[in-house]
Length: 275
DNA sequence: AGCCCATCCTGTCCGC
DNA sequence: TGCGGACAGGATGGGC
Image 1 (cartoon, rainbow, N blue to C red):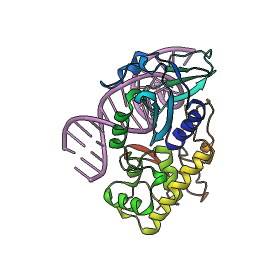
Image 2: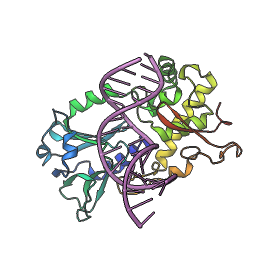
Image 3: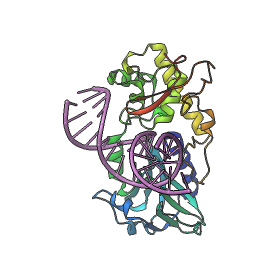
Image 4: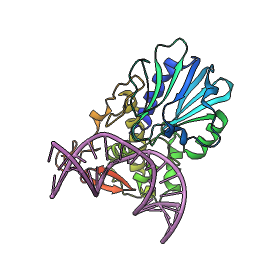
């Protein structure tokens, strides 16, 4: 499931290959993805001849800007993939869009088995206003006082749900919320507003260190995730609780990792290390 | 305000 | 071996 570190890895790979390139064509391969376009969507034909100006990330959203004010807003959701590959590589039924470029031996493909993701052709100002309306601040740019303020502002929420809420903080999903809470020694069902100062500091530091370390290791490949070159990440080897139900805790080596549904999501935690 | 549930979708896994 | 049902999950939207 691509979360902030996976999306960051994809974006940095695409950026180095695509920024400054001129689009030859954008083609949708399945009607499904087109049905997810909002009413204000641009005709894909408009992208022909446009130059990729910038590619960046906001939370888990991927944004492209092109010359002429066009943009792309892409979300990989759970099984989406956005990668460069040789044009002759066979297409399968899960590949929903392809973009080709002048002078580049690779094409960009959007593939998504479960079809939860979207790939929206929109004007850049519309993308920016949508993204800013829907997303809270970036966790890696958040300072400690603002972090504390957000904990109090949504203090009734369980901390797991708090971390997952994209409107509070943008980019954290189910894997990293569990890994962050384990490293903070905090149980996922604790109310966000009732953490001690020491716990709040631990949580803040763990959030940054887990996300940064995961970016360094190019993300976690649990099911479908691959980067822009089709390569898997390595952070799954560092997971301490996620998907480890029934196995001994890697820290205390005694307690057994539990799994509970919290805030509607499977949550893994150590009943001994997390208070 | 915040929780729970259903929804979208398909591959995988489990039990019979 | 094969089939059917449960399940997973990011985000949204409705109901309580």
